[in-house]
Length: 193
Image 1 (cartoon, rainbow, N blue to C red):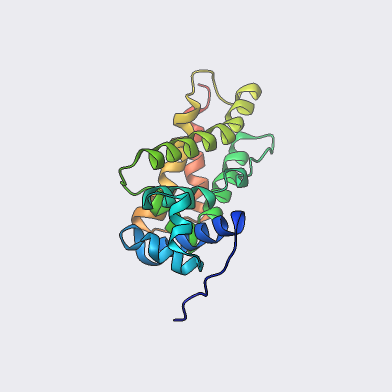
Image 2 (tube, rainbow, N blue to C red):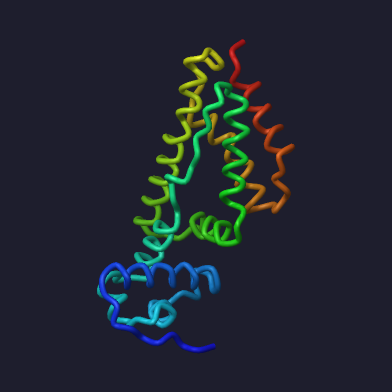
């Protein structure tokens, strides 16, 4: 394999190149296989260019993961019906996680790597996503489809967790029938009595 030629890029071009190279290295070799030197070589920059911005591999990996996770990409459906909104939401989640790159990044994001910055980034990502999609339950509450006693975060976590478990742990199919059944189970559990 040919070694990328080192260039004299600066600023954003260097940062983008290094972050993309770091993600590719993570996907190809896993966390333990990534080194600052291998990322610099893959990005076609000098090692000092990487160390100037990231002092440790952990900092680099955290920034690389964050640069490739787009919270804004979550589409929040508004059909006027809780069940329909949740079915569309889960289909969108499944589709956004279906690429090999997304699956690999998700696995890396859930690894038990012990550094505070990644833990903070994970919490922020989850909190932001829960806030973004929580509007579905707020609208359902306003329409009388759920009661005030429903814990919105717990409801969403109970919907998301089985999808992540199938994608990451059991590698079982996550088809529309499964997603609809999951939504029906949740909607039945949080409907007013």
